[in-house]
Image (tube, rainbow, N blue to C red; front, side, top):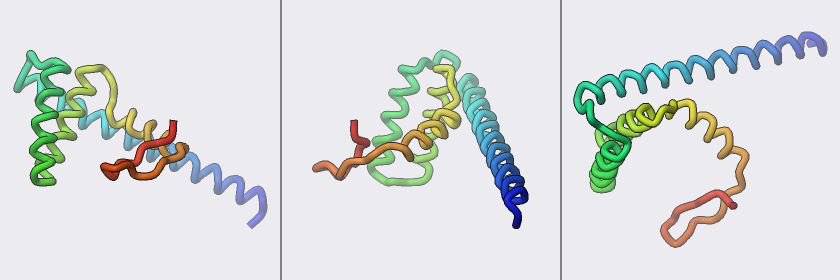
Length: 118
């Protein structure tokens, strides 16, 4: 393969990766919009504070069972909270993952939690 062919192939892969990232972002926005519509129908008076209280309840259930349903409830409520606050949870999570890959990480603390170095 010539250098020119390699450069063209590399560019094609970069463009494909950008297209996939765009599709993922858009699909996340569509899901979040669907969550928001359901939330509006179920509880049109919800606020970030009421959604957060609901998330805390669901996390308590998740701590007891580690079940798929409870995990899904937390995710759905986080999407509702993000929508109510005016941002795309999916998009912000993608950006945060990019940032996390660049960070340096510490050792587990006494609770087994690992945080990035500050």
